[in-house]
Length: 87
Image (tube, rainbow, N blue to C red; front, side, top):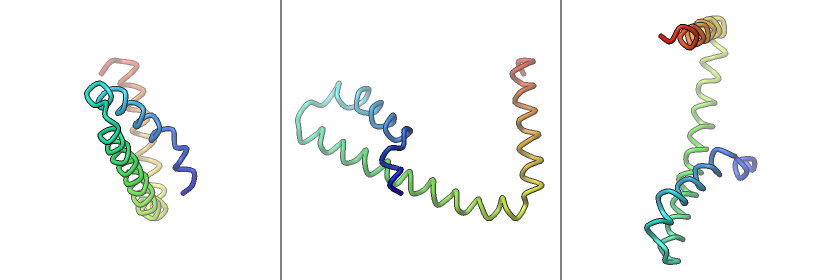
């Protein structure tokens, strides 16, 4: 859980949101502080959802390991063919 404080996806999300959507329109300290708290809360909730769904899918992937590996391999081949032949 402590590694989520240095999660690069959350850091980039915060930097992008602040620089693109908040700071051009809001400059007051209370408004910026409120947005910082909202971004921190949404980042934390997103990380928790990511962990919860990962744990739920882990059970499913372990149960159907062969099928999951086959489907993922076929999707990888399709993606590479789509890139190669511009499908």
